Each structure stands twice: as C-alpha cells, then as structure tokens.
Length: 74
Image (cartoon, rainbow, N blue to C red; front, side, top):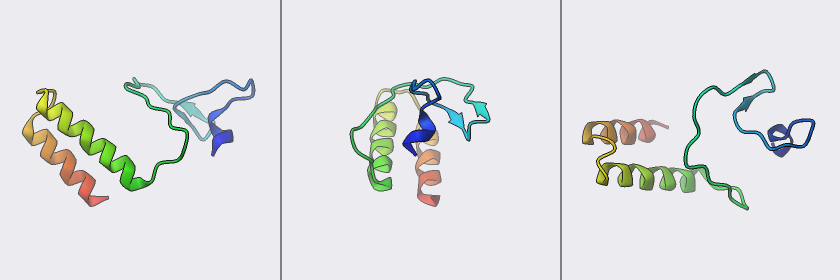
C-alpha cells in the first residue's frame, strides 16, 4: 500500500520488504506513474524492454527466449 512505501519521516523509499530489511542491489530505469498499472500493462512494458535489449545486443536471443518463457509461466 502507499503507506508501506513511506517511512516515519515521510520520505519515499524503494525496496523495503515488510519493514524488516532493505533491498540490497541496484535499481535502474525507474518509472513512477500517476495511476496503478494492470498486470497486463506491466508485462507489455517488460516485453517492450526485452525487445529493446535484444535489438541493442544487451541480451542474447537465448536469454530473451528464457525470460519470455518464464513470463508465460506466470
């Protein structure tokens, strides 16, 4: 919920899991929308990103196929 992404000081936070531990890693290419996205819209955006990565040579065709296959299982 919205309350879960704000801490007690009112700062916006990413990566907090159930207020117990923080995300350790990197976040890249973050988008903030003014409305909730449906799961199909999120998948469409993800696939568009995969298509772009494949076209730019940032992922292999095998990795692309694996990610699409994994997405289809959801």
